[in-house]
Length: 187
View 1 (tube, one colour):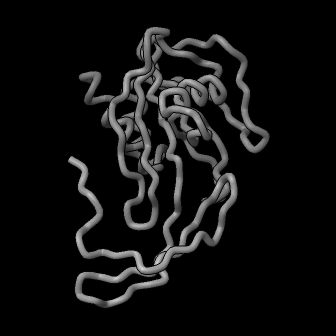
View 2 (tube, rainbow, N blue to C red; view 1 turned 120 degrees about the vertical axis):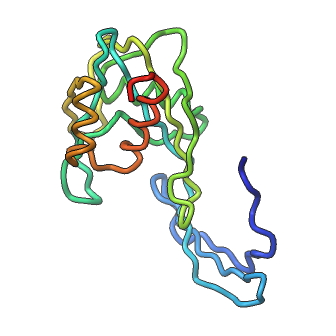
């Protein structure tokens, strides 16, 4: 169950301080129920993103190696990306899987495993986790200009080991892997 804004937390002033296609940052001044004012309180606004746990017919999981500038290194993770304007989370999941990997899943549907809060302290971002069954290569990879992605197909045992030894170390991807494995009965 999702809760509404806490009673008594009142935004007394709000201003968008950065407004670009890739980053929206809002500065709020808050009045707490006690009457105390808190601020500036910065909140990143976002349309959210989709993460795809894509499994091939022979039970291999599609992973991507890619550079992440924020931490200055390559990571191993599930295919994922931001939701474009006028795009559904499911449409984003399909697009990101195809663009980053060239893979597509079962044409019937992507299965939504859940929608989760990303960083409730300083962001409005939610992410949507999808399961793509019977994933198979169909298209050429179509990476963005800033992406240099290589693929890896891993068994369920390998991805559990990657999480345990820190090879996969991005929190949302670790959570997504465990949620998907539980859903598939492969935990």
